[in-house]
Length: 92
Image (tube, rainbow, N blue to C red; front, side):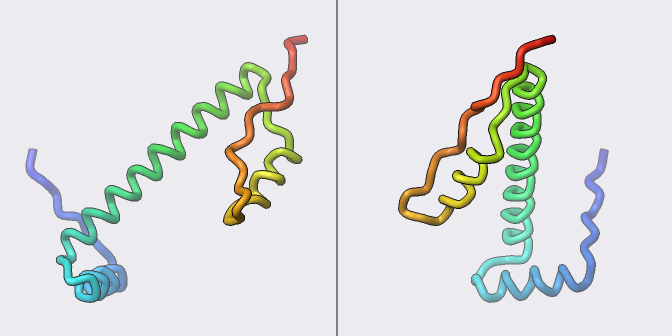
């Protein structure tokens, strides 16, 4: 099976070529790095959703208050770790 070319919008291609020029790299290497980063993020997002779904199915949840404390701490010297579930529902 042959490789199909990846079609890129002209505006995106221009941005890609500008970034390559500014960074002293090739458009191909910038595109490769961007695609790899995108795929890593998508994989991490998918895993996080799967883990959260499993926790929810088990009746384990993180309270809004815990999430709010965590998010408020982002970028501060006392940044908190991701909160653990603190609400546990039992099957009825």
